[in-house]
Length: 76
Image 1 (cartoon, rainbow, N blue to C red):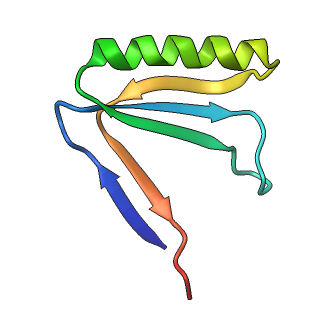
Image 2 (tube, rainbow, N blue to C red):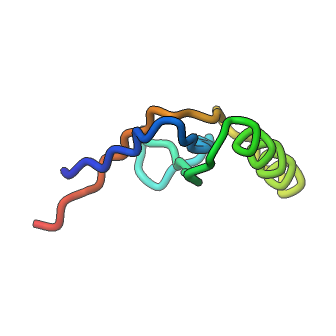
């Protein structure tokens, strides 16, 4: 497994975790950004959550963060 670290203060990342997943025990996560400030991230998060609600999708969690680490599966 590789890791990509997106800890670039003062940038913010939108993180939405859905209740569904492709692998048992691992929920699908959507990551968007970076955003230059928390206000723009929060606005985008609000719009994203409204879009998901219209589609009948209920997220497990959502937040704007500036300390995101992503694990990327290795290729052999």
